[in-house]
Image 1: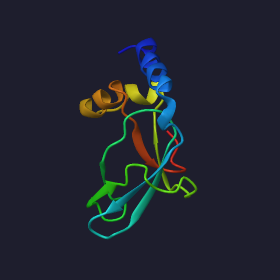
Image 2: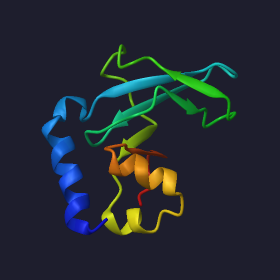
Image 3: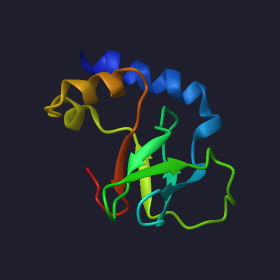
Image 4: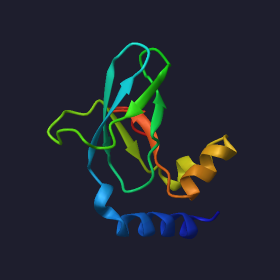
Length: 109
């Protein structure tokens, strides 16, 4: 995939801007911790994530949460340069299909 094609995916997702900057909560089935996320970009996010605390499954509240919560993690669209260096073919396909990546706030890539 070249940079222009990659940018077009971002344009298409931006046209579906209803999800941008929305807050969500993932509740862990193992340790009961809640991970508060924000969608920095429009795109696809998972229903389940691995809990950042214990690694067990954390389930999405499907955005049925207060939008005033303070996020600790974010879903974002990586830069093209970062995308090119992702070793996982599965993750690259996820991004090519409009998927977002997950990170703790403050870990900029």
